Length: 123
Image (cartoon, rainbow, N blue to C red):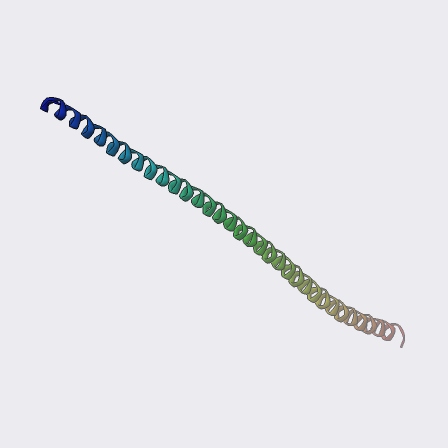
């Protein structure tokens, strides 16, 4: 074989070898890219689950806060109703006491007036 043919044959062999190396490098890069894509997708799914969990927790906290607010509202309304009833009962008792005192006073004055009339009429 001539030198030229040998050089060409060696060059072809090197090219095949270079192609094999390039092919392996590209294959490795594709494999790494696929692995990174899988990691990215897994991270997205994990983030999605965490967001959903956070939304559920926020909804739970909101429900609890609304329930507490409603309980406080109910308690306030009950306390207000009790205080209103106490004030009403106190006012009614005071009015009855004043009415009784006024009746007693009126009865006493009617009696005094009757005595004065009888003294004036009867000698």
